Image (cartoon, rainbow, N blue to C red; front, side):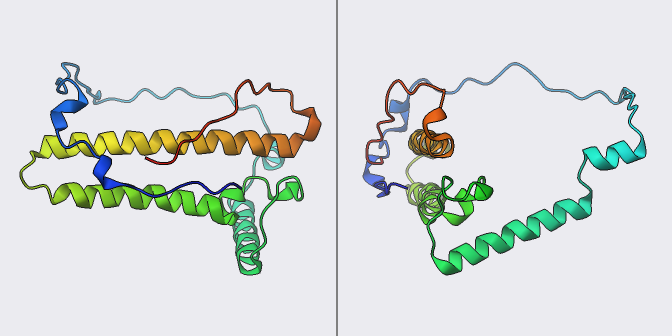
Length: 179
């Protein structure tokens, strides 16, 4: 996987919270729950044996979870880089075993918290202004994360299906340095 610029520059947070656009309007819609519940019965014509074959039991799910956890731990100890093309059985575990993906996920979480701590030091700002600035920084971080996820998904799909990748890729994903 490709390394991305993950430097989070707090100076790019808008100083004037009103510059982010019009003020947020209060919604006139209200959400209410009824005090009664209507239960719709579902006709399940499967026998007990058919259900056992069609669905995983709780024990089977727990066993799969433990196996996946052991595989991830073994790969992280060995320091091996995960390749879906090389080991298709590991498909879906890349996010846990690939150091770059772990780093990107950790960066997104830390950057949001760092921004929040920075904004909390701005005592002259209103709480709404701090919330809007945090929302703007979070939106920017989300756009960056989405672009990386899109590019990674494209590369994973091409690697998994080799030349049989049938979905056309019109434009490559362009990721500018964050922020």
